Image (cartoon, rainbow over all chains, first blue to last red):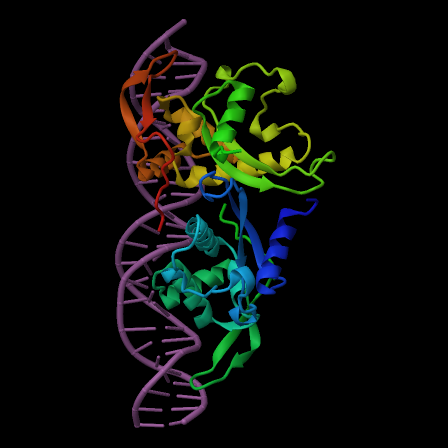
Length: 172
Length: 172
DNA sequence: CCAAAAGTGTTTTAAATACACCCATGC
DNA sequence: GCATGGGTGTATTTAAAACACTTTTGG
């Protein structure tokens, strides 16, 4: 009582995972009286995105047994939570196409290959690297970083999102 | 308690307007504690669409003074209801582009000019008639009716939506 | 020099846009 | 016959899609 929905979501996320500052977005409100056999519970579901799962606290208490899954092979969930996950994935897929939302799923600096892999995984389909680079460039959301990532192979240019926080791309 | 959110929305709509069978869609849940100075109220807002405002009961009781406005010249509203209306309009605009949602705003049979006028009003920008016809035809949502509308001028072909109920258009 | 990942252009196809005149009817 | 709204086509521009080779580095 007396709390913003967004704040409550953030508080819950923090309590369950220890995460602060994750991207949060209201998803949908689920209120089917039969969704929980014990009581009529109305849940305002939120979508959270994080770049680095290693910063999530190990599940304990009522979250014990929580695990990470590839989004393409999500385990069956209790209650109507699979439906929620489906809504969340759909929302994320569509936002990828017209926003910089990927910023919330990547480190501050990243390579084009990382970005491409992220899109391919979430959208569930292969992506043509050249067309993808062109399309992303046209959205004008990225800034090239001076440094580059060095490793076993040819160095990769590093990019970052120009804006931190959601930025929608106009498409008239 | 014990009621689906959609059913509750339908019940409220019916109580306030006498309407049954309107298109309904959950919009967003507003829960800012300061949105109502008297108490912390969480409202699950719905969007309803109707084709014919003349079937709406005259406002009475707590709805007394309710009026119709052009969407482009919406009056200021109490509480955060202007924000709700803004969300609703945004949702409607985007659904016009990739669904048959206009079926809920038109009579069963209608002319292309009516459809075009509807789009122009909601989107708030002029529409090129020829390009619009092509675009709508490509979505393949309409069926041409055998009859036509006769009146003061050249008769207009009548169309209806092939499907009653929301139908999303694939765009990969 | 080899393996591995990064980077890059062109052609084709489809969709969006811009644009103006003729048609059918009632009065 | 004229006013009114209904109906139609083409050329241009822009975006999407398909497609394969060269480059750079570490080992």
